[in-house]
Amino acid sequence: MDTHSSINKTQAQARVNQIRAFQAEQQLLSEQGILQLDDNACQQIQRYHQAVLQQLQQSQDIDLSAQASHLSLGMQIVSFLGAVALAASLFFLFYQYWGYFDTPLQVGILISAPLLSLALVSWLQRVDRTGYYAKLAALVSFAAWVLNIVMLGSIFNLPASPNAFAVFALYAFILAYTLRVRLLLAAGMLCCYLFIGARFGSWMGNYWVSTGEYPEHFLLTSLLFFVLPLKFKQQRYEGFAALYQILAAVVFFIAVLILANWG
Image (tube, rainbow, N blue to C red; front, side, top):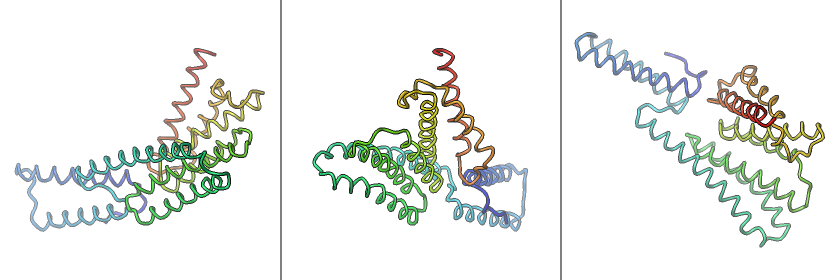
């Protein structure tokens, strides 16, 4: 029997599709009288395929049929929309009723929100086999973390700093690699762009808030992100390598386009 412990979900799903295609072609050839196998050989092939499919489903939670694939895609879309809606509702809920709370309560809410949402992520990761709800909670936890940093700075009248983007990026990367959430990986990359671009701007004597006016500060970061999956393999994390390189290329060429047209 094949060993499937070292393959990722994409490779496992490709193996399932290969088996299904083989079974369909075998049935078609048998119906046309081109391929005739005895009952013993057919049963051996069928038992082997069933064992492989069962092992793949247990190890990677893949879809064994077209209907299951459509259902999984629907769940992913709903999870994404639900995560965005929950994060947005959390953000506007804070601002809607924020003025009714005194300072100690505000600080307590801001500190407890990311901690409670992180605990929810940990619990869902253990009980939810598909991981959809854990990923949704992770997006909400990231939104709570961003609100925590931003609102605490506002409460205590702290000066705005680009270092906040480094903190956002760190938390996004931790959640992304723990739960394999590509959306959080993209969020972490964008925060890194802003942090590094702001730092470059500060070293060049510019105010960091004007980072977007100097797209050349994003070029080096794009090159680093593009090379990163070539240096550090991402086989365990489905789609991460492609996301690194696609987002890095998009930001790089947008920066070059802006420089070419507006200098």
